[in-house]
Image 1: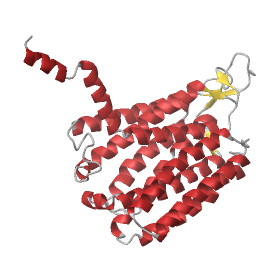
Image 2: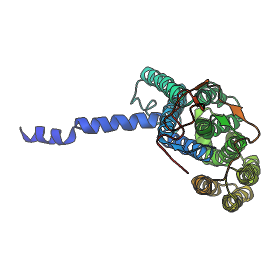
Image 3: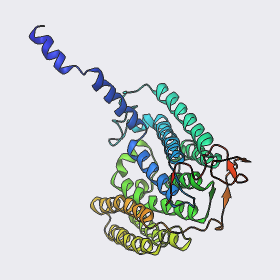
Length: 347
């Protein structure tokens, strides 16, 4: 081997490196950080829901199925927008605009992930969780994505989509949607408005290049954007505290949520008074810090939820009698789920 071949062997990537690069591309196609946030909110929904114990097999199936569905929705969104993404500085290096993946291949593998994820949720968890996951994909791909070039209300639709994952986790744990599930979804919905609008203000010129109709793109002074951010940040304070009023969390959480909400509101008011990139960045970073702290408080101070709470949506899964070792032989068991006491840790 001569000196040139030695240098070439040092430069050329090996099989392991190529595999890692491929994994990285697929993670970027499915917006890995956004998918991780979806899984976190799904986990919180599962933890807060009324249940007899922590069933690890159900929780694992829920997270795997939700991850595949979230990855699929994000990949289909990039497939639909890859030409517009190529015009934007922030997104031009994504896998499809950068030609790292074939567009048709991305579409096919996203569909496969969507189908597999939905099947896992339907057969290993329950039908309600699967239906919510499918609804998320359909809203994200067929409503939110095309709406981004037509109306500034796309942000609200996107917030609805982002509010569904915790309901998937809740439905997986209890098989129904009590009041706490709806309030938790409301928290995620309201939080996303100041979070995204502050980001959109920082990249408003980029969104114009991509042809997307975001509120900051048609609000050159930022006056309206600032007002909307303040109003939704203000609405987030009672919405977050509302989890304690429906029994999903305790009162220590409520106190913490008020403190966090007040801090985010102060940042929002600062942006309203002086609309600039620095103030928008402060709001965005505050929202990024706010959410994991709030979710952590929820899980630490989980309340005693009344299973018979109002606003209940039952899972349309058939119930049949089943025998479980050590259980009451007349107790019904939901198809596709294991015994609530088998392999669980009491909480």
